[in-house]
Amino acid sequence: MRIAVLDIGGTSIKSGVWDGQALSELAEQDTCAWEGGAKLMERAAGILEGYAPFDAIGISTAGQVDTEQGSIYYANDNIPGYTGMEVRRILEERFQVPVTVENDVNAAALGEGQFGAGQGTEDFLCLTYGTGVGGAIVAGGKVCTGSSWSAGSFGGIVIHPEEIDLNVEFSGCYEKCASATALVKRASAVDPQLGSGRAVFAAFDRPEVRQVVDGWIGEIVYGLITLVHIFNPSRIVLGGGVMAQPYVLEQVRERLAAGISPGFRGVEIVTAKLGNQAGMMGAAYQAAERLKEG
Image (cartoon, rainbow, N blue to C red; front, side, top):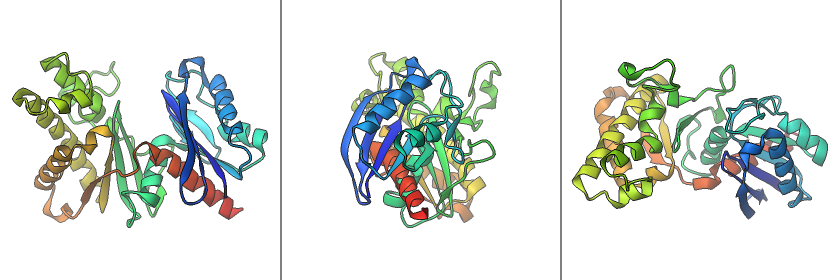
């Protein structure tokens, strides 16, 4: 088995080959998203040419993905002209092999479920904290997509209704308050030099910085309390570079346990294991399953 895999993000395209056991021939290059969807597909095809021959292609990509058609249901202006792009058709016609296409957060959840922190349970939630807050719902080992391929958009949970401005997307919502971007915004208001998550945690010993981090962790927990009571998951996988901080995980577990009903306290809170390869591994898994189905 030789599956070519792409993980298409707004900033970079990660690529590699899956042999059924591991990823190899890993590479990464700029997406050049501003050039638009058509140019992006040319770039993706060019990368795939470098891996030929292969038996199938697995694609993890930014945007809402119609997995039945293998097309982009919706993508914002970060990649102009990407909405409606028939990714599967374009690549199957060019390479004459089966192609699967999945949203990047859903693909990461599948990767964690099959090979990482989600192993051992078929029902879990996966959240990533980065520029925004991404989410995925896995039930029975499969991703729940929703009616318009958007289920798991946990960044839209309202946690501060008093801050809602109908002219500002996600105002008062989880994404604006609990993302890594939100942490940096809080910290840079205290010290303009704290312009990244790495810088924030490097200065963690400063009382005023620790206070910022503690306030941000509180925002994370507010959203998780809601999700635990709605979905009653056996496990929640937390991803994103900021979640690698032991203090963050410890505090999330402690505060969440205190904030949820006793009947829900069996939920496990774990950090993602696969890092930036999760999306590629999930895409590889999907493509391998399609090959098995013939």
